[in-house]
Image (cartoon, rainbow, N blue to C red; front, side):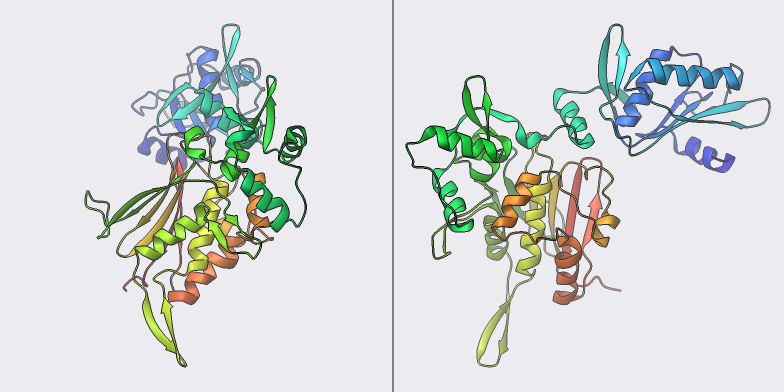
Length: 411
């Protein structure tokens, strides 16, 4: 880092990726800040800076300060971390120490020592706090050491799963067979082998993935499993709405042997909401009248399915948001993009799967393409062909939004 970059950080003040500290704090305090930044997206701790941004400089010899930083990161953080250290002479005998942490730290959650205990910590704005149980689970999930979808849903026995949908999947979709209805042991074995059920204590219960895909009433056990669909008359949220619905039920539909749908899955419900709350235009193709929807069905379905299978289900209390305005349609998914995925990478065709079981089964039903590059191959070209617009892919701290435009932007 050079002086210009440092001055820019100082001018912008502390934020979720920048912390100002004196170098006379306890090593446990420094380790806590290091662990929190590693658990978010990395950043910088600037030593020799007051809270208000005043440069006071290191009080220790820079070499001693480096040893102190490395020792704190090695003995007061689990797993041990090795930050990047550098110093900058700001003039007037004031030297600033810069502790830099990477954005893609692989061993989350990093825990800071507190007495004889080790505590996961997270960065929230300009503050560091102890992680909640749910936040710690998300950190394990980001590191790939924990799959949230395999968690048992306590109280959700196999009777809470829809046996009709299982038959539809195994017999119609996979062209296989299922155990007899009264053979409980075989059903338990089959569902456990597919990670749709697991054993908790002495009982077989549904996993999160099993409940999301095949649950009779997923909302009862997983309140975050639905889609909130809202249609506003204008271009901004308002108290007045044209429609406001809570879409709920399993991800997968219930079909018949000839392929017709008896009960829709969530993706089908979402498209039905869009269809009912947008106005098609009619055009003639030869003798036939063709309805042209404001948003192409294939693009809307792909966007909704991506949200359903890739959202972070460990974030409780919030649904996927499907919002229709008079100039755009937005689908907002709770949670950050996983690992090192970026909107630019998605545009380029980067593949990722936060919830692999959901991806696999939705692909079996034909909701997703086998190559797993729906943003590049369907959503972007689909909107270009439809009306010449580019979809917006918006990553924020706690959510990801795909925005589809009804018409090209003026100018």
